[in-house]
Image (cartoon, rainbow, N blue to C red; front, side, top):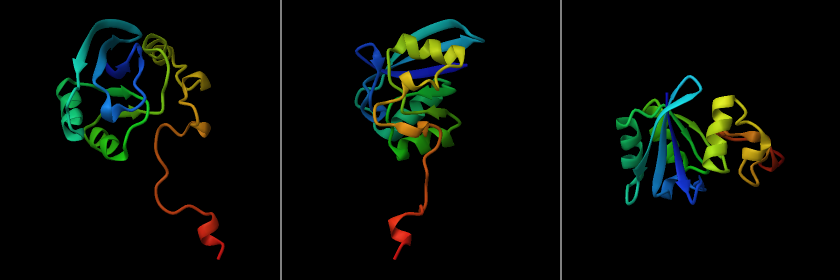
Length: 130
C-alpha cells in the first residue's frame, strides 16, 4: 500500500491544494518498505491528482482539501482521509496502528470527525423553517 502525506515543516500540510511536496511511503502490512519525497510545486489540481495516480498512491492523508481535488482523487481510485493534522511521523504511525481517528489528529475546528465524506445537498435548518 502506498500512502501520500503532503508536508510542510515536518507536519501535515494544512491545505493539500497548495502543498509543495508530499512524502510517499510504501507499507507492507505495518512495516515501511520505502520512502521518498515528491515535488508538487506549481501543479494545478488535475495535475496533482494525475501525478499521485501515476505514482500508484492508494491513500492520501491530508489536511484541508477542496472538494474538486477530492473528487478528482477519489474518481481515480485514491482514498482521501482529510482534516488530519500533526507531525508526519506521528500521523504515519497512527495510520499504521489504526489510531488515526483519535482527536489529537483532527484539525482545529473540525468537530464531529467528518473526515471521510462531506455532507452534500440540502440540510434541515433555518431554510426549512419558513
